[in-house]
Image 1 (cartoon, one colour):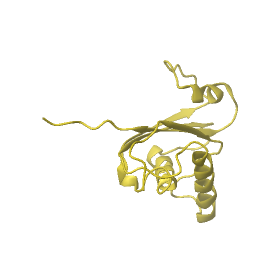
Image 2 (cartoon, rainbow, N blue to C red):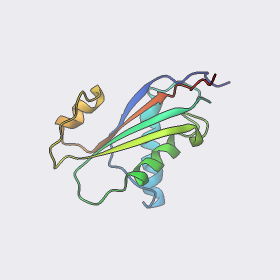
Image 3 (tube, one colour):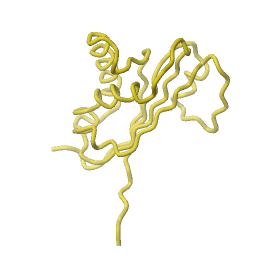
Image 4 (spheres, rainbow, N blue to C red):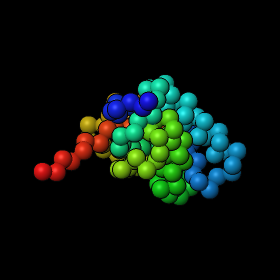
Length: 136
């Protein structure tokens, strides 16, 4: 049996992002790191409810980055762990933050503070419930 609601979950993946175009072994290791980080904060069973996924990728801008390609492996890695199927991700967003540039973020989530100040590349993932719209 799955949980009936989705808790708000946030976790950090201390890794450079790998896109769908990476080598199979790199993608496996990357997805394993995502799953290991997520398991620390997620409930033991995946939800059947719709979810929203927000991703912040802090990088040094060494190469051109396609946000959709960064988001895909994260969605894939969370399948069967956070949610039963990635079709449950009804809203997703990715923010690519090149740490070589200056940013001004209004009221950033607490998990972003370490990356805003630190030297490491990494990914902050936030999973939130989606409130259903009730029709009359």
